[in-house]
Image (cartoon, rainbow, N blue to C red):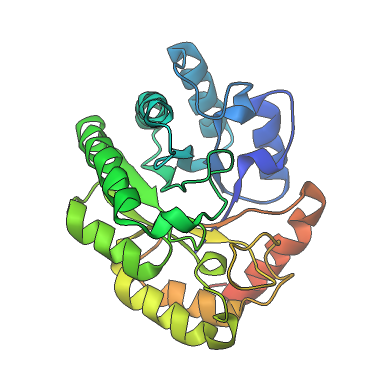
Length: 280
C-alpha cells in the first residue's frame, strides 16, 4: 500500500510546483484539489487546456492522481446552494475523467448553512436524509454517465454520520459508481474512543468491500471529526492499518489535516506502520 497526500498541503503558485513538492517528499499519489491549480476548489467550469496541463504535469512526475475533491454541502438548507453545488460537481467529475482519476470525493453535508463539516441537530431528521437522496441519486447517475466513482465518507458531523448510515446509503443507491472513503478518525461518536476497536471492526465489516479511497489523519477526541496529523492523536494506527490491509482496498493511504512541516514525520510514521503490518 502506497502513501498519498492532499496536494493542497503544499501551498505553491502552480500545480507543477505543488507536484514537485509532493515528489520531493517521497509521496507517489495525491488527492487533487483545483485550488492547487489556482482555481476555485469547486469551479463551475475548467478549461480543457488547464486540465491537460495538470494531467501532463502529474504524468511527467509519475504522480498518481488518486482522487479529485468535489466537496460541497449536499444537504445545505438552501436548495439553490445544492443546485449550484451539483452543477459544479458535474464540472469536477468531467475534469477527473480527463485527468485519469477514478474517484471524486464528496461531503454528504449538514444543515449548518456556513460550514459543511459542522454538526447540526437537524442532520438526523428524515427531511435531511430525503434531501441527501434527492441530490445523491442524480449525482451518481451523472458519475455513471461520465465514468467516475463518487466517494462518500462516514463522518460524525454530517448526515452520513456513521458506518451504518453509509451502508444504508449504498444499499439505497445501489451503484458501483458510489463507494466509501474510509477515515478511521471520523467515525467515533461521543464516548466512542474507548471502544475504537469495536467501532472500527464494525466500519470495516459494513464497508470494507466498498472502499474506494482511504484517508490518514488522527483524532484527539470523540464526538467530532479528527483534525490532527496522523500519529499525533489517539487513533490506534496499528489496528486501523491492519483492518485496511485486510479489506479489498488496494489504493493509497492519503494523508491530510497536516502542515507541510509535519509531512516528513507523518510519512515516516505511516511507512513504519505499513512495514510492521508486513507491507514495507
